[in-house]
Length: 270
Image (cartoon, rainbow, N blue to C red; front, side):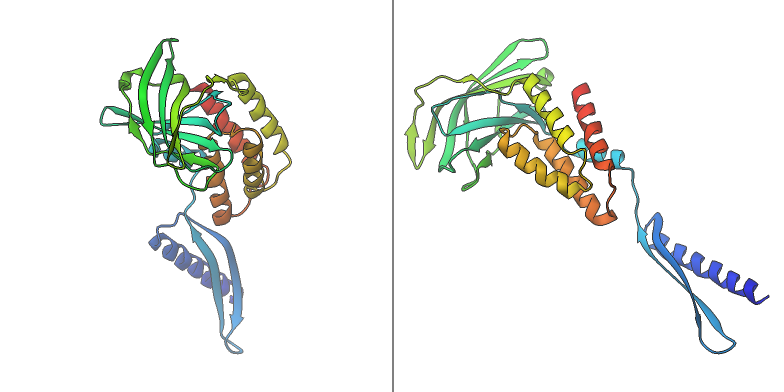
């Protein structure tokens, strides 16, 4: 009879814990502990503790974040060897049937480059060329090797999207308030789509033994710096989201690499 009473008290305490968690809009309780305490020789109590959490599937959270972010990325595989900057990505955004873009570039020597006068040469999925001349990029952050410009409008109809590739021709730029005109033409970059695939494969192989998302993020930053930013911004943001998940919910050894592989698989199918 005494054991039965204690069991009933435990069930009441657990139900109270569930009620409190539900009031906090949680859908699970983790780290639940049940302790018995004696208040006197013939009075005992049951104490239940736990952490109220809200659990969601990783893939659902990633898809929600992807839907929220309407910006698509095109890699730039040409560059001008005579200037100390290298365009890395063109970011495309569609809003109210208007297309705009921003330029992400790698500033090799942390120069004071503030504006670029460019021609953008896009290729659509059918292989047709779409040229956007005299596109001015500005608003680059100062004192940073990887800089991204403000978004500017470009004369491309939304129905042309998605686009397959882009080349960036830098006709002139402003460095230390001086207009500089490059004297060399753009050349094909070292990284073509095939070499990017090889670089991704090298990255995945290297992180196979990593146990935490933070280890992967630290390696990804070093890998990107050494391989001309071959890992795109969407992948880097996803890795950062995994680090945040790790801080909130603890580690999931072995799952991070699988999650990254799944994201890359989805990107390759798009």
